[in-house]
Image (cartoon, rainbow, N blue to C red; front, side, top):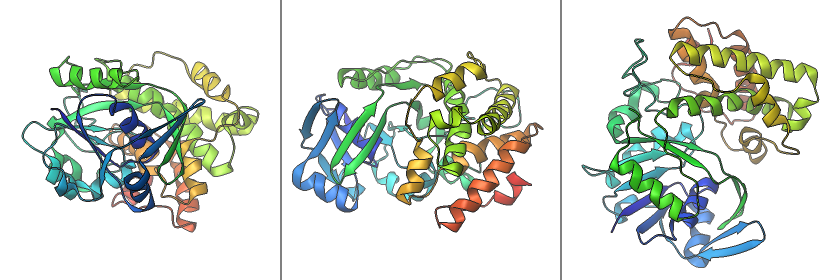
Length: 338
């Protein structure tokens, strides 16, 4: 029986678990604190549209109880992955596949990327300080994933799905592998959409376009997406951030199949929504600053693309997060912002 572990049973991890549990697989979750206790005692409750379901799931806070896994979904925040690599080792065998269901540039990004730059087969310090994740997990285990669902934990053990069904998947080298088909089929059988892309990096950057602009501006000024759309000054900042992001992406071979205007229009049409970075700020959770904006600045520095607006807004948000003790400093901050 296929063994699947979800490491981090928060809103996205919990939603994934609920959907995957509809398959005949050996599914387990790694969670902690009151959320883990509630799932143990009462099961995981998913509220989706007008329907409430409860799922009895195997949950633990100790990976060594679970043994070697076939697939591991990492659904902790991107900046927290380096903190769990030692625990992950207890779950990894010769053929284990690792899927990082997180925001921002993934730690494996330049593995088999063939960008023709000196970044190929190198880690990204802003995502993976000193290459700890790269060296510990091995990028050959990585399967790419872009996460689109929106969900939240309303109370321990209870997850509310707010929209979106898609987890786009892809091999780092663009191939159609057996492991890609297996995990896509499991997601689809669980009621999710799981398109398999040969050019997943393009989709990673299209999502990053919105993360590095709307997420940052929303968190700085506590605005919803439509409120940003109605403020010409904030919208101009969003546009500049996206322009710089696109220049960096194109320098390493990314193709943007929609325009900035189309991407902005899609975002500001969503009424009353504050992105995940702003939600984390309100919940006093550490912010995903480096994976969604620091990574672009770092790459821009290395390929000689100026990122003045990205650096300016990065520093503003970093300062705000530090005042609230919501920033996890990496070892390359001065390097990427200078």
